[in-house]
Image (tube, rainbow, N blue to C red; front, top):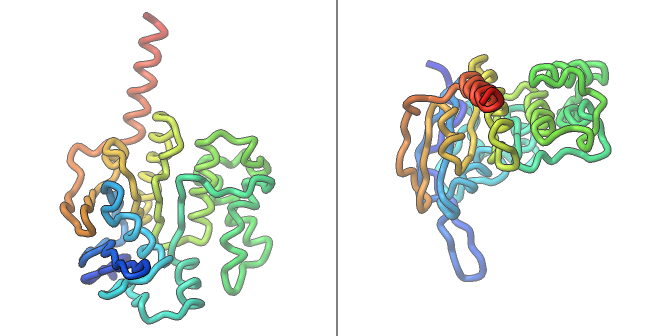
Length: 253
């Protein structure tokens, strides 16, 4: 039996502001196995952002346990937590968070600068190039973000999340700033990575985007209200083919 990538046991998170205590998460137990592709959904205030911050080792549970790849996160000090986060987790954000005056290659190399010990410079470049090629940007190494489309910038962000070869890829609303076709293309990259064995957890509020995952966890009021496998899962390559057929039909009409 493989070790779960994520194991939450009665996870609770309370934020205290002045004399007011807000229970953001109220006792969640969740297991995500290696190779899963999970969407976490919920309205504002549901607890999904708090859940994501915890899964990304950016915050700690108030009570309960969180094990990341078998390591009890609550027992780590700040430096150990930062090291675990950098080695085990890749992040993809809605806003891309790329350095504006820095090339795609250099943006992707950034996480390796915080790895201890850092790989040799030649190895950093090789791994960054490999990650960019993996997301279809092998010809854009030297382009800055301003020279790339929104979809290409998100591909750079995905490559950056992959460069340290993490156990887990966390994506926070990764299609939120993208048009419909580009969103499908980005979900296609996630599906390809998942097919190759990458564990992907994604926060989204879009039902049509969640359909590309294998499992959907819905949160409300700090609790998991449903946790189900996706039925009639959307396949990005098929959806792109449908779009192209529709466009061709319009052009011929």
